[in-house]
Amino acid sequence: MKKLHIVLLALILTGCMSDSWWEPRTIMTFDQNGNTLGRYQFTYDEQGNTFTETGDMWNTGTKSWDRDYRISYSYDMYGTRTGAVKEKRDSLSGKWLPISRIICHYRADTREPETETHQIYLSGTDLWEDSFRDHYIRDDQGRLLYIVREKWNNGEINREISLQGRFTLKTHLITPISGWENFIRDSFKYDQRGKMTGGRIDSWDNTAGKWKPVFRYTYTYDRKNNVTLETTQIWDADSGSWTETGQYSYLYDSYGNTVETHYAPISENTGTGSCLVFFYNNMQSTVGYHLGDTGIFPGVRGTAVFYRQKR
Image (cartoon, rainbow, N blue to C red):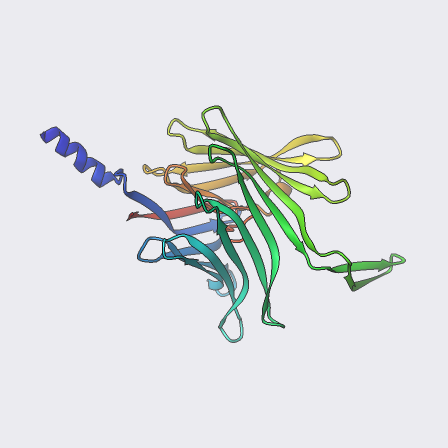
């Protein structure tokens, strides 16, 4: 009996009880020279749901942080996320101004995400306009197979027209077609045991009427089933082959949370535009995604601080 008490006490002290749940508190990002880029902070409500996410950019001139954006999340009475609103700080008035929002929809039987509608705010008319719509497609076992993103064509096109190769005019064209169009498809791959081995991103070719490969990634796991390495490749349409662009490496704490991630590009060109991802709760949760509208953390290295909450 004494031995059992010691084991239970050890589980409590190490945070390994079944009701233990970790959430990110602060994320810091850095460039290839080790210079600070961004600081991202998260707050939570009394139920443990993410309440706000704020992004600050480091100003090298003033040696201080500049508030860049704020995302506020909303939930229903059952704690299911219903949406999010992203705002930017006006440099003159200091007020928060809306720029985009997400509206979430779920399957009635499983309450799993089914679609997310992304909208942009039109300050001139004080109206919201559809921008993207994501469809979550799963198999019979509930595994996520695809996220298909559509873009909204409102019948208007802003285009630059070159005249005789000397002058460029910005024109606003009205088209007879409006509606949802295929844009990007994110597909996920699994092994026979159901472990995700990687994924691929395709873009929709309107002319050919089919999906064309753009980018793919593969995971390498350690013995604790944490992703320690992610290898990225880009599709070369000229040669018809995949070319490696770099690798993300991940370091974890003793609770299975990514405390540091680092991107090593093959060349300087492939290092530009990289965004960081952090896994936590033993791969049950992630924050940061290069196609997302929330949790975008540009940089080649990042660190994260987590805190444990009870659920």
